[in-house]
Length: 513
Image 1 (cartoon, rainbow, N blue to C red):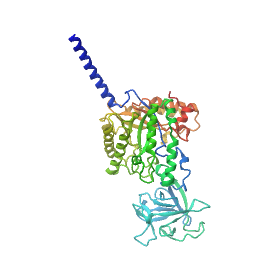
Image 2: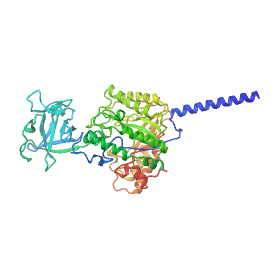
Image 3: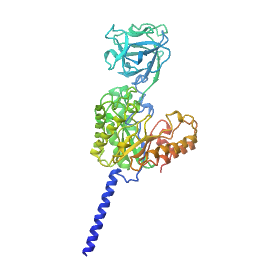
Image 4: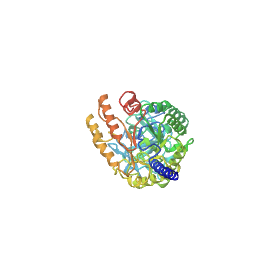
């Protein structure tokens, strides 16, 4: 009897060891079983605005052509040449360029629908020469103030023709190709003989969170955005996803969510409530959540989807900036760590090289990882590869030593000239050959897990048939399905059908179940 008891104790002891090892394995690979792979969709355009996903969100903005970051090129009707920040900024404004490019582009900072500040190539602001005669127009100020604030008056009969009222009350005019002054009364006609008239060409627009909230202004933005958050993604979307083979969502959020309900201007409160709703719906319908910091303080890539004001990229340029971003991750993880649906936290989306240096990014990722681990031992920590010409395995020295770490790559057959003339079959072959090789390169026995965090069944092919899209989507599902962490389609809803997974599933282009 004693021998039986001893044998039983040994078996129980061995079982405890095995269970302990299993728990350790589970902790190192997240909450779900190791074989669980994410088949996710991005909820893009919801809590971080991207105007191309839902253009109607901008319809009610007064003077919506002139939002923050709009690039204006200004041609003098009398000189017949473009205004230019000489040397890209730091000195005078001239009117002697026959063609317009970077130095001839002025990016708007919107104060209200008629009042603006104009930023030049080297990031100085157009203003009056207050150290001189007070009327010469220069671009020397790094920080805009009253002397750098102008009113733009558009001709009611031809909105491409404008006058620019300076802070001294007079209008800009071109006296010579090398002399632009603010001393016109602006009482002339709008014809080609009026030196205060400029013809505008818009060289680029931005439609992100900064543009929509600053465009509407604080009172109206709060109403518009809360209605958008309430209606764009709803519980029925989670029911749809759960019944169609989607087991997770990647939810892009902006850094200002950590200051909800009173985020800094121009952002408005309410997105945190929407994220709370998403977690509730996810828990109810058995869907995991990946929180994705899509827009970091100062913008990590200069694009509208990172809420850049004017296309500039400032993230990672200071320790303060990095610490502020870590605090956002800490806030989000602390809030949702005990929620059964939290599966992963993505520390930042698409940082852009070379301004986001590997040193600054590694420093941030190490600190961000610790912020997540402070609250959760099981949530995956996702690190996005940098955009640009970089080594795709540059994060491995850091990530390989951190349990539960994941490398996020984005694979689009877009945004590069190499796809411009590819046929249907060539695009499919590219996925099977090139993307497969790229994914294999990142998949190592002791390295981090791999995640194709963004892909889409869209391409540069014109006139493709439904069957072509089905084959293209299936090729990507096959290849990206090998990613050890999983994949996420961009995005659930979109006015462009092939970018909408909801539309693609409903119309039989993609089948996941």
